[in-house]
Length: 456
Image (cartoon, rainbow, N blue to C red; front, side, top):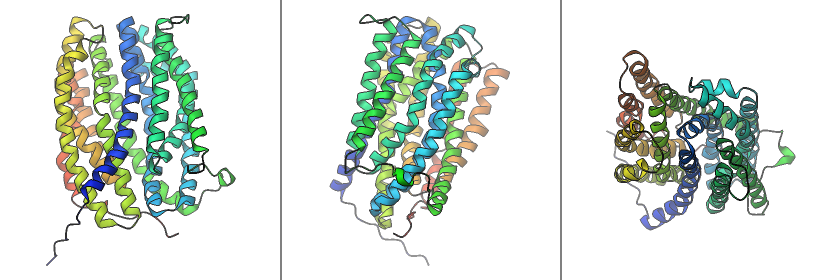
């Protein structure tokens, strides 16, 4: 008969102190990044509905790029958090080299696509010629920022996992605040600058990315920081590369499933008319802003669990994971209440047609339910499970819940059954809420409780 494993007591004061120290700066960073999209939507929404909608659709290209970057930096963070917990700085430098090479290649490819074929890229999301024209002009300028994003994300990821969360957040916040200020200058033509509207938003993003990368390099030059080991940049340790690939490929599969799926949702709504696309664009901004806290806790969860497991304290790592999973439900219900509370404010912040306003109100109601699943899954899957190297489950769950259920329903509703845009929008929110029982079952198998590091 199997004996019940004894519970490991948690020092709650230490736990919450560490969680707060990690989660708040990351949540602030996430909030500031989401604020750029909110600023674009708010400012361009004051110019014209088409300008706002076109930029929202165009930024889906960067969203897809971020799926590739997220998989690479995510694999680096999983292994890096464990090696940092173990105290192996040399291996962490090799990981930095690795993610920098892969992210650089991804960034170059997306940059070239935006510069050479912006029209066909926009055609994926809409057939409306004015939206394609505005979006293409945006991508030709914003593509330069995509070239820099991959490099800066590598620096910021390594800062997070090596006890430099605050400087990491400060760099992102400075870049975002600059982006928002420059948005106002170039969109509306303030301070003697030309009024560039959508192209102004792209120029503001590019300038802020240049500053962000410069700050990353300057801050990381200090002695206490982990930097790329350029003397062995082309020499990747074979065993470390194999461990990295084992974590990265499932993350990439999951990221592409989620990212392309989310982009498909946007494309489906974009083909249901300008009013539905506009309402969906605003709802997406609200969703991203409200998800910031669960994003912060999810990232903190991966670091905390990874540090404990990498240091060989498996029982404590497991106890931390259980505690964080419980916290995710509390954050989920708080987020639901917050969505409902801010709905009147969101609806009145941008210039929309009467029909688009009605769509937006009900989309926010649907979004409030979706937030429960989003928060639970972000912390549990992307935080706890990934922190212990259980990265395959995310891809499996997305294939089933998103690609075999939510997307087919949304496609059928939009193009075959001609459902209301609100019903189609509800279909796009099914996957997060529907997979909660499956996520909990996977969590309780505790396959994520493992030390991924190699001996020194």
